[in-house]
Image (cartoon, rainbow, N blue to C red):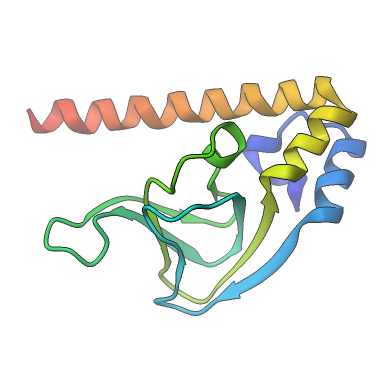
Length: 143
């Protein structure tokens, strides 16, 4: 499954195997909250099956849905780069299967295979740039 995830594109078999061996599967029923805005978190999540929604101000009148993610999408990648609280809440829209990896797993990748870790960081940077570009477009369209 990992080789089909864009953020892991270009990683070699050994790196993917190392990550896969440490991946933890979980299932969240429709409506279940996976992570909450403001809480501490050190897990990166891959959506294997189902759909989740990412939002700010969850359950509040000013709630804003930032994205809907489905199979092969991911969230929680900021925990690989920093140790700040979660920036959004993620809720399952339908019954959802996830795989997660701890930030420490990525540190082990860095220690064991620094060149593979560099590919991962480049992929994260590209994805963050893509997301920022999208938010810029949305913002510009509203103003």
